[in-house]
Length: 158
Image (cartoon, rainbow, N blue to C red; front, side):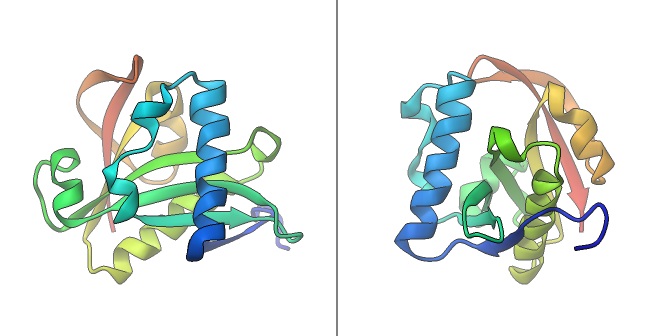
């Protein structure tokens, strides 16, 4: 492993066991730690989203994120069909600070490229703005609340 490289590999989640791992991480981070109501954490977009999973060498799941595209992303991207929406990025407490989140963002961007998208938007919790800015995302528009937490919209052109 190179210095600074995340202690994991990333892959598109395929099959029921990968998706179950993604949902377990989201439940731990968003519902358990951040107190997001479970009924709004999971939505109809989960069925059509591209889910990405980060796993350690031993196969344990470390993090997840999803990419919405097409009509599913329209309300998050200003209706631009060439832009996807990165969301539900979550890293287990034990894996934070190790580069797992950045590896997941890059994996989601790669999935966006494979879909022919020209950019990726996201709604960042304001405490995470610096993380996303270091990855090339630029904030735009006013702040807003989502699940009772302050957020900003951000975009990166691919």
